[in-house]
Amino acid sequence: MPRNVCGMALRPRNVAAYMRSLDWREVGKGVGYWSLHIVNLTCALHLFGEHVATLSFVEGPSMFPTMAMTGELTLELKWINPHDLKRGDLVTFISPLDPTRKVCKRVTGLSGDIVCVDPTGEYAPSTEHVVIPKNHIWVTGDNLPFSRDSRMYGPVPLGLVTGKLYARVLPWRDRAVFRNTFEYID
View 1: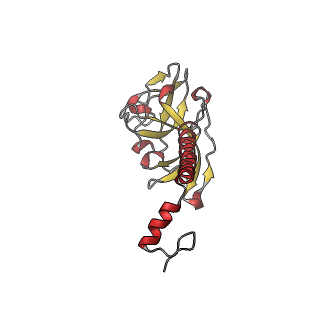
View 2 (view 1 turned 90 degrees about the vertical axis):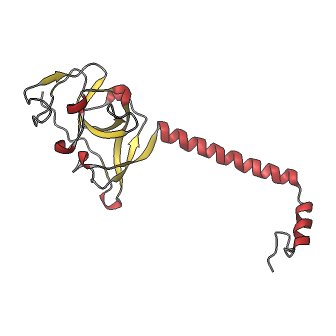
View 3 (view 1 turned 135 degrees about the vertical axis):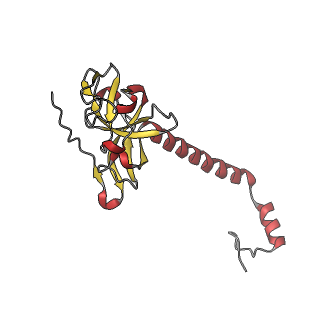
């Protein structure tokens, strides 16, 4: 027969007696105490995820071979200054075409740079160039034929940038810190 904390057999009469014997003020204090700890922890985790760093799932063909098409779990830094971004950084931002989506691309141009709109010639003549306005960046996917990027929607305002990818976490065998190997030709 199961027993309660006091060692009494749990029969209907004993359960009722046990419930009457409890000091409900102490029970309430204990429940309230632990409830506040859970609420505090939940708030702290939420604030950390929104403003410091979070794990983000990145999938799709536009960033292949840097990212697998089937998807990878990455560490995304949120505590960044968009004005400190460098060419070659992997950034996440709200899509200018669909504000409900967050996308990941590589920064290929900064404010004041002159960039070739589309070196492939698919969306614009390969001779067309644009000056990136102040407080904007030019982003492209690593897999140009399968990427919807600044070649389609132009420079991205820094206000849309939500974070910077720091490392690949999963799959575990492919974990790595993303290094900036971008070469800028002046």
